[in-house]
Image 1 (cartoon, rainbow, N blue to C red):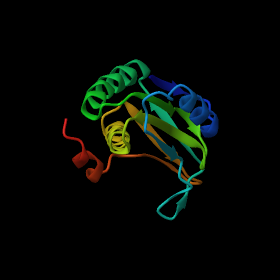
Image 2: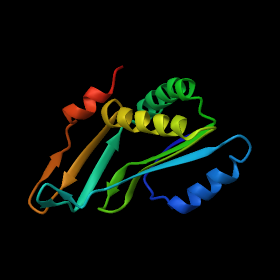
Image 3: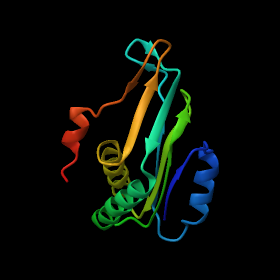
Length: 148
């Protein structure tokens, strides 16, 4: 069970292989979510994205929500890797791997975790275009998904 915030990119296949090897006993499901940097925002080409975080607070917040989600969904194991720093379009931003006895548990955990990270975690995202940059604001639709 790990929460990792890092600047360097990760290899999805390597992470799946390592996670699968350590989760052979009781799991019936391993669910994977990968978030990638977009190439466009509306009609503007994105050149890069800067993700900033307050790491100590982000780790504290994330572990707290994961503790609650583990109880709710009866998760056996998880891995969360979230990148920060300068990220180019098409690169990986986030990886969530979850193992559980049944798929619905892993899907529920993953979905709630990513929704929570988009709204509550101390991350700030700035998109850079050819002529300007803009901070990414939260969507009202994302905020409505979070109850706490």
